[in-house]
Amino acid sequence: MACIGRLFVAALIVIAGSEASRAEVRIKDITTVDGSRGNHLFGVGLVVGLNNTGARSLSTQQVATDMLRKMEISSTIARQNLLDNVYKSQNISMVWVDAELPDVARKGSKLDVVVSIADDATSLSGGRLILTPLQGVDREVYALASGSVSIGGANARGANNGQANHPSVGRIQGGAFVEREVLSEINQNGFVRLLLQDPDYSTSSKITQAINERFPASTKTVDKGVVQIRIPASFTRRVTEFVSEVGLLMVDPDTTAKVIINERTGTVVVGHNVRVSGIGITHRNLVINPNMSPGLRPSTNASALPVPNPPSLLPPPKEGEERFGGLPVPPAPDDRLSSQSPANRTYTVAELARVLNALGATPQDLIAIFEGLRDSGALHAELVIK
Image (cartoon, rainbow, N blue to C red; front, side):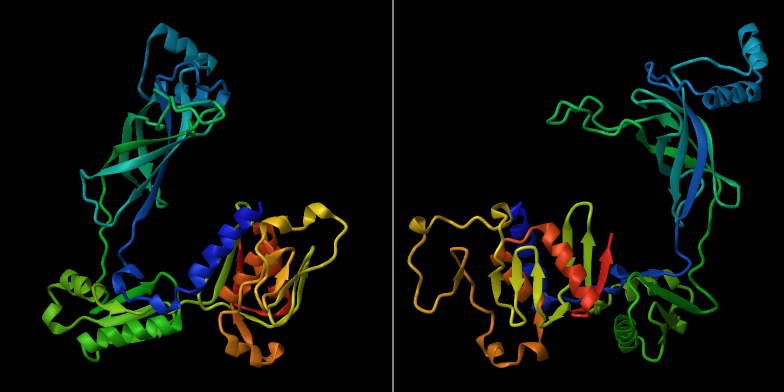
């Protein structure tokens, strides 16, 4: 576990040290155009042809019965099933069908479809989706879906000899045909509005400046998430070309100082702007002084201590070298900082990561320490816990 902790801390050092190598990006990579968006489509359908992996629920049987009624099946067996309101089969499954309708899709275009089991069926392997209408939030039908369901690597087996894929969800590549178009309009009374993917006042101001340098007096910042551009007269009939040219302009976006923690996976991601005030930290058997010097708190639990190398395997300490637990402490990144008062300065994530790396902190230790720093006000960044 300590090795994992070292890998995470090393990643923090790389992120923290990336500030000097920040590069400009295209405006199109950090914004979207207002009015140019996709629409989510959904529907309920029936998958048939399963190999005894289908559902036994009454709801699925009812769906099959309703479908037979709509198709006006009139055989004796079907009539009896309709009267009983039961269609017994273990080769069918009721499914949710989802698709994304792009704003550029036209009638006859193909869409990819995601099919998910909605009953007690166990697998969609080998199944085929019966023609299913897909509707939008306005309840209008925009596409029709059907086709063979692929669950990807149906026979794959993991290292523990278990199913490696997820047989209850499948895809149909190009399985839906668009029947109704949704036309987008990016020209809003002579203006185009850019929506920032990560709203920030500094970034929106930089975008405005970059566009005004190319098209003078055409752009203004509405707020931290919206930039409004007046379409030049020369591009009135070429709005798409204008948006394309704007999207290729380069800016250096600013980022908010954030620490993102995923408690489920133990992942900790820290932005390069994050700084930490000088503060004493005591966590389990780990001790960090306000000047970022590490140490070990005495503990009767030997398993809680980092395992040092045997003294016989370590080289003799160098002159002035500091050690703890038998391990040498790496030097501070900048010796000039040692003359400052620890209580009056802030430290970069690289400095904190250096100390945690020396102590062999695990991902769980990192999470607990960053939460404590936030609660004490020493973490000068937004803490996001997922």
